[in-house]
Image (cartoon, rainbow, N blue to C red):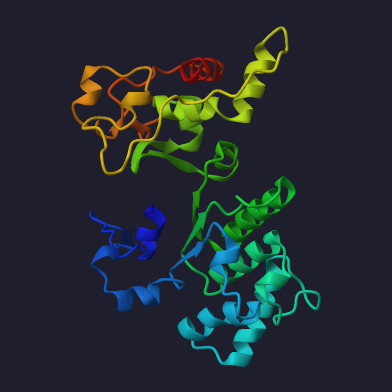
Length: 301
């Protein structure tokens, strides 16, 4: 929903408040006509499911060329030539991958590459990637992530990556934000957040990851595998959220003051980590990475 708000694509019943700034310009104060000139040109998005993001009755060449014709005013022949170059760049070379192919004639990974080509067509300043590897096997996931990293470095774009995979976050992102029930509960440089997971939800996520299980097992003399931890309880109903911290009903560190009002996102004050912040009245104190793993595993059991 955050990404859709940035793109100006929220459902009809949804409303965004606050500000979304691009080069100082508030996009929430921008008309839909003006947003049509920004969307696809300045900000582009790689959607989670390429089969639903692509038009099944249009060729992939026509779908890539569309934004080139609309935003850059390129003639059709020149737009087709640029579309061919974009397909080559995302790993779909001709003549095997013709511009005349339809989405159903491609695999899931190939369709995702087409969606990336569409997003990159006009050289946007910001690329939003919404779970770009969810429906792909592990090998293709790695290829798509490597491709995105290469393209961001090559074109000088900013990448906003939405994912539930903490391993991908650690390898790909300079900064990260952890969200729960629509609010940011922890943010900062990725290295700082991983070194000191202050919010109980962040630790719960890490404890539920395969990487956490491997690290914990490596420290156990028996070498026994353990079951992945799970965060108890359920995500609150958006129509009936608790008055205080939304995570309090599931949090092992919750106290009475947590249930009174939503905690603000506040700096933790750790030396050398001025921009590391958490929305928690009782955050975990700093500790080593091994301690974080053990504590998060125990706290989520």
